Amino acid sequence: GKKTAETGMGGHVLVLGGARSGKTSFAERMAMHVGEKPLYLATAQALDGEMLERVRLHQEQRHKRFATLEEPLELATAIKAAARTHDVILVDCLTLWITNLLGTNRNVAEAVDGLAALLPQIDTARIILVSNEVGLGIVPDNPLGRTFRDLAGAAHQRLAEICTEVHFVAAGLPMTLKGPR
Image (cartoon, rainbow, N blue to C red; front, side, top):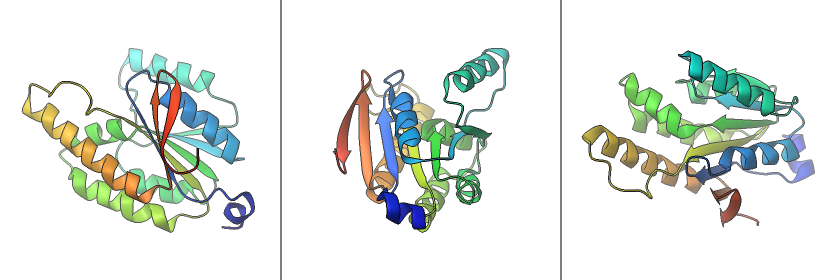
């Protein structure tokens, strides 16, 4: 799109980090910086009271410029539609999306392929994908946990290839793994 050429903001971004690492705050600041009409695309479903409260708090803390959309499963479809009206889409987070897919017996590899195929086609919006780095801890003691870790790791590698920027956040500090610092 025209905006991409003018601002030189080409390409999509993958932001990895552990739980409470500051990855989402980093991604939000980046989204505010690169876009005029940012969308916060949440993969979380507020299924209980505690979750509803967390979502409400998150929405309050986010800058008012963000629109919010919840989409637990059909991520590629949601991104494609949102890219028509938003110039930056922050997806938070991929790990929860993979969990949702597993929980509904969807083919995770197929869904990741779909997302990977879509990203290079989108040039009207910058996509910032946030995900938990789950491969740094101990080996999960159950088969589902190991499957999840393996699927998340494979998804990260696949998407990191496509994204022009990859950042790893620890203790609120971003390290650039790929792209301009």
